[in-house]
Image 1 (cartoon, one colour):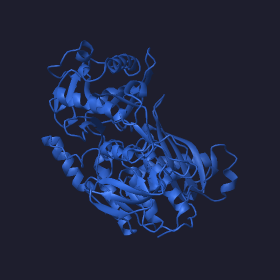
Image 2 (tube, one colour):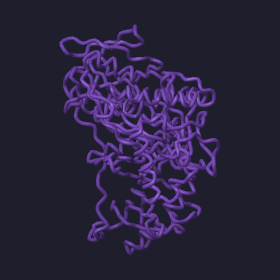
Image 3 (tube, helix red, strand yellow):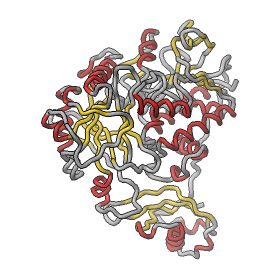
Image 4 (spheres, helix red, strand yellow):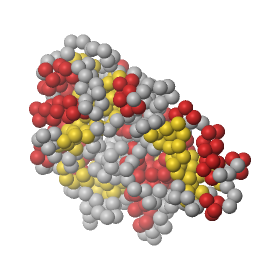
Length: 523
């Protein structure tokens, strides 16, 4: 097959038949001679005229004669391959702590290659977790072990479900992740869209299907099960403890705990696992009408265009970085708390991204100079802000209009923008939650962002707090073989400080699975 790049179709002409015609014209070939056509990449270019840009793989006679064109190449082999297995014997099956993207994909790759992993998850299986979270949003009663942060699927389940990544992919791990998602119920379009996403409503079903496939391949899951300790002999892992009582023999343990497992980080540090504090970012989440973002990004409100997104960055006069994070077109601002008496928020979207509002966190970078140099000082900083958010919001999401945020006063009613939340909310003064240097940075950046997206700093813009779970506040040290200072323990994913988001976490899970595969033979 051959790959053809830069096939462009105007918005009004975007159809399979027109794509086939355009490819045939590019090849100067009767379209009936095109035996097979597969979309490899698809993006939307709205810089001038709105048009779709395709990269396609086609099967045609005499393919070599077309390769003189710079936009036509031989279709490369992009198949993912698990490395050759090692020779060391495993006395016990690998154990994985956490079934977020890192743990789930580590489990899938290990199971696919015969290692029959055991997955320990403190929260519920995804279908039960969904009911628990929806009840929390309605009634405010928190389950500390199964919520937006904890449970099968991880924090990414209740997000926009973005699957894009900037990482180079010479070994096609990204492609493998997308193929696994698509095989288990995600839309096939994620295989070629430039910025693919699944959405919470579909992710919950996909995760269940992936779990069932892992079980078919020999894996096992334990839900509502807390990893509470481990034992070491001669600096090598020998067993783990669950629920403060049961011991499981174990010599290979993947730590894929997620970025909010604060009690686990404390236990690991007490057991001499090496970790360091890591910079992260905190801020607020802003809501705008989706039509405002569409008009700014597309310069038109023509039907047929997907809900537009944005990505914004700014450096303040005080040299603080401020940027948009987890932007959710047509999404919801959600209560994502995981500890009693504390409140954190996040954004999520369903697959259709069809709510009235766009939302995004606008966050400010902070470092050890802001929160301290002990490995757990970042967690202490997060907790302080989340406790204030809970108090100021009286247990609900604290909310303020931008005009009132600037004027340091509590809002009394919404303006032209109607709120879109999952979870109850209350008007409060967000200035009283965040430190002044963060508030000042946010206000300066939001005014700058208004020069890029007109209306971004509108008086009626809805702000909510507090966004603290942007990334892990710790990094668990691992060597070039992905092993911690205690042999047999493999820190992995976002919680360990090595990824951010669904794709990079899933890929890190695959890398750790490969490292185990290179060392050990199958059970």
